[in-house]
Amino acid sequence: MKLVRFGAPGAERAGILDRHNRVRDLTGVLADITAETIAGRALDAVRATDPQSLPLVAPQMRLGPCIGRVGKLVCVGLNYLDHAREAGVKAPSEPVLFMKATTAICGPHDAIEIPPGASKVDWEVELAAVIGTKAKNVTVTAALDHVLGYCIVHDVSERAYQLEGTGQWVKGKSADTFAPLGPWLVSADTIPDPQNLKLWLAVNGRMRQNANTRNMIFPVAFIISYVSRYMTLMPGDVIATGTPSGVGLGATPPTFLAKGDIVTLGVEGLGEQRQELIEA
Image (cartoon, rainbow, N blue to C red):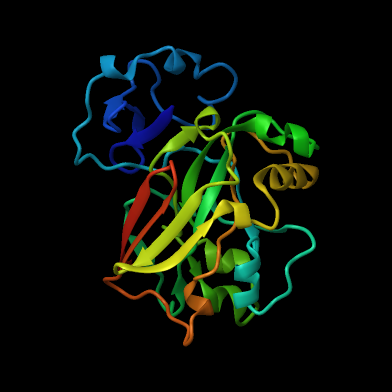
């Protein structure tokens, strides 16, 4: 099952992909895909619906973030050994956690806004897990049972805000449009092994990141279990699991995004994103 949200910002509606990856209108079955509507058995009616029976959505219709009203956007830093090396730090002995403001969330093809005064806007393709049922102090063995599905998140970062001055990661990660989410929310039963997915990112057609989730230091199940020790995870919460090497900060010389740049990225089975950089 591949769910989407379509429509103008703030007025998105629920959709589902048919067997040809065309968007079908789900609003007769489910009005929207949000933290509230995915809880419990709310999606049973969706699973029982034949997408081919639903109205087609115009191909040019905007896709919004694949889940709305996200409660928490939890992120893991330095979760690929090659990325830790390019950052010049030792591999962490346990997950490095930080948060992105939920106001950073936008659609997968929306423009990325360069904040006023920003000079080091960077890219990071990541696999994200969307929580479907409450998770508190869960074991690694049971962790994936709490996952509704997976999607792509582009963890856009402003490195000067993140690492210079007071050096606050949240400050460098939370500008508006710094968390494109989607295009698809793919149900967990469609992704049998989240630790064997290719992920990639290109800037202006040049491949910058090209890796596989098998290279994570801490796998998805461990991350969910770990996070659930420190905060209760609720339906609709999103966990971004880290990025591989190839970010602009790690290039020689460091390379950052500028107005007019085009970023494309994808994760195997989860679709692709495309964003243009604009000035806020």
